[in-house]
Image (cartoon, rainbow, N blue to C red):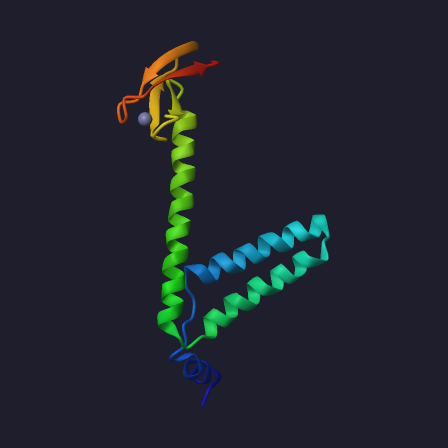
Length: 134
Ligand SMILES: [Zn+2]
């Protein structure tokens, strides 16, 4: 029996690598990098915990539970990426400003005109003042 076959036999029925595995390892690397500059002892335990959890998931035989965890993590990653994308799009839009309605919290896209204006929310018909600085 060669070494490769033994590893394949050991890994059969185990969960293996997924997206959350990489997220945990990259997070551990990022925290370790921060720890190089900050030097707080507790941070080192966070690094160990992230690596241990990543490899515990890697060798786990409970594939159903690990898949659920991975799907939850993918949902979070998607939400974070979407928020960053929306933020960048709004930042790049120089013709408009984005303001929240104080009553219903809907985001309104308004033309960028300097000064104080009165606005009507199209969702809840609430009238409120908007101050645009530049
Ligand atoms: Zn509203």
